[in-house]
Each structure stands twice: as C-alpha cells, then as structure tokens.
Length: 222
Image (tube, rainbow, N blue to C red; front, side, top):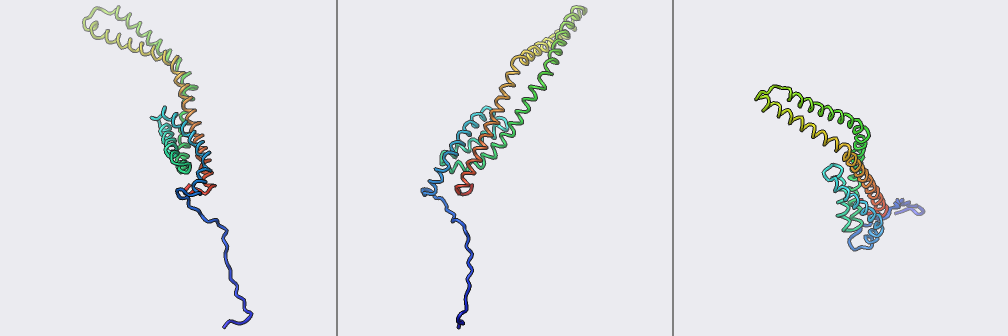
C-alpha cells in the first residue's frame, strides 16, 4: 500500500526537434521544395550551359573534359526537377572547382609564354635564319669553286644544297608564322582559358548557392 502524502516525481525530457518530412512524389512538400529551388536551379543551368559550350572547344584537355562532365551532369538532371539539379550540383561543384584550377594554370602558362618566351625567342630565330641563309650562299660559292668531280657533283653537293634549301625555307615559314599568326594564336588561347576559368567559377558558385538553399529547405541527401 502506498503511504498517504507521498509524492511521485516524473521527469520527462522534451526534445525540441522538428519531425523530418520525407518528400514523396506528388506530395505538397515536394512541390514546395521544387518551387523554392527553381530560381537557383535555373541560374545554375544557365552557367552550366555556358561552361558546356566553352568546354567543347577544349574537350581534349583535362580542364575541358572536366568542365564538359560538370556541365553535362546539371543539364541532364535539370530535365527532371530543380531538386534533381540540386542533387547533381554536389558533383558539379567539385568538378567546376577543378576545372577552374586547371584553367587558371593553363592561363598562367599561356601568359608566361606570351610575355617572357616569345619576345626573347623571336630575335634568336631571326639570327638563326640569317645564319642559315649565309650558309646557303657559302655552299653555293663552294660548289662553283669545287673541281668537276663526278661523285661530288652528283651526290654530295645536290644533297647539301637541298638540305640548306629546306632549312632556309622552313626558317622563313617559321618566322612568318611567329611574327603574324603566333600572337593571334596566343591571344585566342588566353581568351579561351580565361573564359573557361570564369565560366567554371560561376558554375561552382551557383552550384554552392543551390546546395545551400536546398539544405535550408530541408531537402533530403543534399
């Protein structure tokens, strides 16, 4: 029997935790989640489209291939729903960061070649071409001064003359390319590397914003 006046104390732990809601297909929670992610998903889709187009021009490079994969993930999953785009953004963010890093390295290398290598190499190429042309003239003079030996006239001098002619012709072509086409090629290379780096950076930023928004809305597995 219980004694009268005895008090029983019950201690209850109250946990202030919101119940987790699993969004199922066709549920109002899923519709609200997709509506909340629409703007960020569209922004990421636009950045991924630009990255995809720029990566096609450099698909045979490492950063071009990474950018192509990063943008393709978003463009494929964006056809499903904004929530699907948010799931793809997890991988797109990492790949876009890697693309931006490698593009920055390629951009730095192209700028170093343009500023430090090409200006010093052109005078040396001109000097080498002038030396080859002088040697060609010396070979022609030596051919006229040599006695008329059958073996020497048939085999030695024509071969030597042909070698020097090829060297001088190639030298002239290289100098023409280096003085006219090479600066343009380097300019477009720098432009492409810089554009790819900026596009990858923008894609990584929008992917991070989409993931943060999805996490704030309680999206599962983000």
